[in-house]
Amino acid sequence: MEGTIAMATNHLQEIKQYGQSIWMDNLTRDIIQSGELKNLVENQGISGITSNPAIFEKAMSGDKAQGANANNAIYDADIEAGVRAGLPTYKIYESLVFADIRSAADILRPAYEASNGLDGYVSIEVPPTIADDTQATINEARRYFQEIGRENIMIKIPGTESGLPAVEQVIADGINVNITLLFSVQSYINTAAAYLRGLEKRLAEDKDISKIASVASFFLSRIDSNIDAKIDAKLQRGVDDINVEAKLRTVKGKVAIANAKIAYQEYKQIIKSDRWQALAAKGAKVQRLLWASTSTKDPNYSDVMYVDELIGRDTVNTLPPSTIAACLDHCDVGDRVETRVEEAYQLIESLKDPDINIDINAVMDELLIEGIDKFVQPFKSLMNSLENKVKLLSPV
Image 1 (spheres, rainbow, N blue to C red):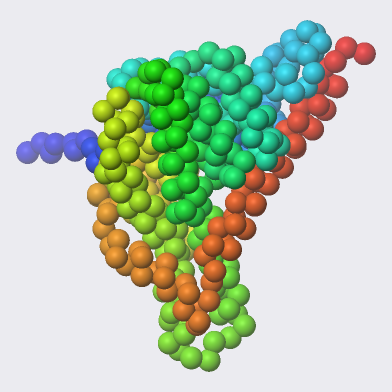
Image 2 (image 1 turned 90 degrees about the horizontal axis):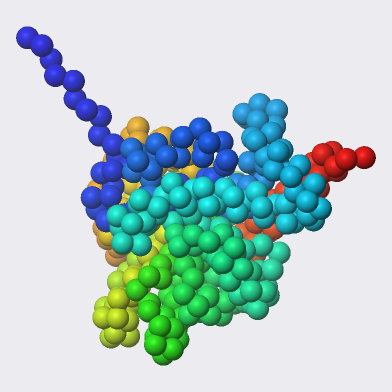
């Protein structure tokens, strides 16, 4: 008797059935030119791209893991063209990045059209060096959107005190926004409020709000890495009481997911509000929570835990290539973002226990400062390596 060959389940496609979109946290010219990105979009269920300075730095300076300057050479001809045109280094950088963003946006255009503008976006960040300058952020967001010239791009703006007024104005301008570097639940609430104000401002000017999309990028693994390090330090100093040790170990690797589940409950309250319903009646799209920083840092944890535990309606998860591969192989798909919610609240509350004594707000503030630095440093490093390349390629 002949056996039948079972088709392997595509877990990324399976996740879509629960109302979550999977985006990829990676963009390099080689995946565009090789057809890999097209395949991921058409066959694997990827429906968006997020990028940041660290990703572009790897792409342009050459990732050693791929051989000496493997990606770097792809950009040489365009760098030389920029040199010949007399462009400053920053403008050469923009010409390279904008070209990649346009190409990726064109590949994702069918996903954008099929989802009526909910998916199919490519995110690009304004220069992280202007994170504290509201007006400069507004100016650059407007310029990026206009110069790239694609409807299906999102401008990434940090959800900081200086960033949120920029978010409000840019949304009012009709520009799609990905608000990034959100760690605390309150920062998400503030972000959602900025989105609503931007839509209301645009509506007050009698302009269409139905074509604007936004995501609120809520970071995960960095929270657990920070808190786990604090717990490990307490354990290493020595704990006399076995019950105290148990309390500390219970918290490890659990805070980020609990925090995200609480943020999702806030999202549900927002979309129930009369204020949101009035905007929805005019065609406004929900601002989806996007789970970011989803690669597991601790090898003792499941490499797909930030995927499996946070699948749910009206969310996005952006995954680096390694997590995409892991998820395709062994994600355990289920609708879990609203499971064990009461436990999530209790876990966050337990951090105040004198035996644990971790100030969650201080952790979030620390992570935000670190997060901006993790964007600024690769950006500066990229500018330096590009400047060196420009000198090499410049005629003597």
